[in-house]
Length: 100
Image (tube, rainbow, N blue to C red; front, side, top):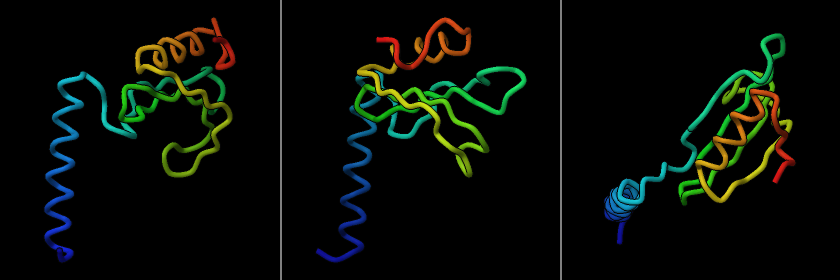
């Protein structure tokens, strides 16, 4: 199989994966599901990024995401919803990423 055929095959696989994700109601890998400043006076942002398999990671980053930033805290959750709830709690000051 040559390069062109492999790329076409990869495109078919990607289309199939996208269709499965749509059926399951989950986001593609790397999709930012939530973004909010952590505090009004600081340069920190709370993000939730999908893993493509139904889970997601909540992060607190400082800097110019996604180009030039430092990840200060990261926690992976088994569902996108749990990660978003954790991020909302962080921005409201109700929880930390260490809270189960």
